[in-house]
Amino acid sequence: MSGNSLNSIYRLNMILALFQAERACYTIGDIAGILDVPVSVVRKDIVMLHTHKECGITFFAKDEEDLDDIVSLLESGHGDDILLCASAIYRNEVYLPLSELEFSCLNEFLDGEQFEIGPIHKNYVIKPMYNQARANMQVKVEQLNQIIQDGETIRVTYKTRDGKMVFSIIQPLELVHNAMDDLYYVVTISRGSIVALRLDRIRNYEISEEKVEIKDKSALDQLPNIWGMEVGPKVHVKILIRNEANVQHKVKRDLASRVNGVWTQEGDQLYFEDDVIGMNSFRNWVNSYGSSILVIEPKDLREEIIESAKKRLEYYC
Image (cartoon, rainbow, N blue to C red):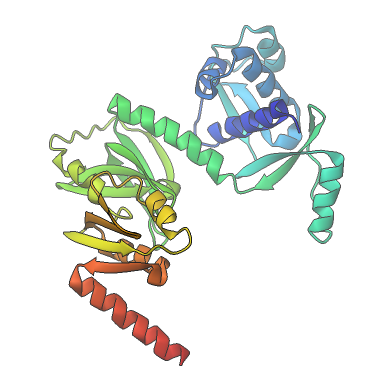
């Protein structure tokens, strides 16, 4: 499969993801800037998606109600600055490039569970698949980074852990990627404390006319110490990473973003110290490595982990 074919499928997915947001409107030039590709390429992609109804998306000009033939306008190059909106029937779809042989093998592998063949594009079948979370996340990250740079206030619709939908108006200050859980968080400050909203739980966001201004942003200084985006008291921790298999390499990779942490090598023993906010998340991370990590400090956490291990051993016995 050629790199060009893969790139075209990636672009199509990104365009679909852009127009999934409610009331999303973009010009051809806007999309070209986001994807960093020529305007002519985006123009062809939009026409392709619009004309193949299997893709489930129809484009229309936002401010030109009398426009009947949008395809001709786009193909002529005279519609590059027109705001486009979309009517979409798809939900979190991913388009996968498959040859006819690959498509046949996929159906065979899935015990006869058949999928409809989508439109043909550059000699590949565009196969609708589901769960487009990663592409959507990339779009959200780009949009929110721009909102943060512009100092805008947004109205957020957020799904809480217990499934409730809440609405709030916030000024996003930072966009943080937590390597421990591979999740993005939108960080703001409320009543002097950090508030972190999981990006995948934000159902909708839009620029708000009601402005929020946070004058004291000193709470953001705690971000390098936060573990798992959990708030709480700051605790000094020290751990020993045993020289077993590639554990030390994996731990260094996990902790690469801990800019205030201190590493010490003594023979084949590796130590790490840091001030941590979020002890529950830290404890869960330590437990994931089993006996390969020994907690030196704090003492109460070490004793708690020992007692927990004893109880698990009793269950097995």
